Length: 97
Image 1 (cartoon, rainbow, N blue to C red):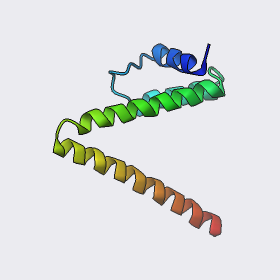
Image 2: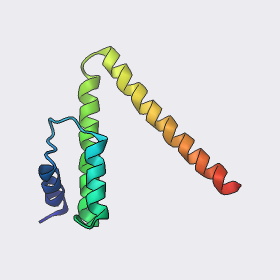
Image 3: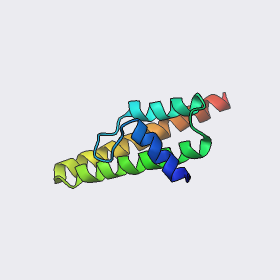
Image 4: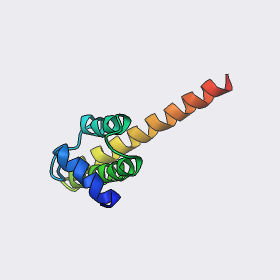
């Protein structure tokens, strides 16, 4: 069984379908399964990649609905980027102290 097949099996067991709304809770379930040793590292990596592809598809679908929705998607992406940069800055400042 390939890593992609393993990841798809995990998604099927969690009832995560491409058409379903992706939630942080489902993503955390995958991470918890890995922490408990229920899935191996390669399967986790494949599942994470599929998860991000599904998020990409969901955002792209929303953005295609209208100009307003596209702007909302863009704003969300920028907000996440800014939060990530702030977290990295905080870590850098903490490490310098």
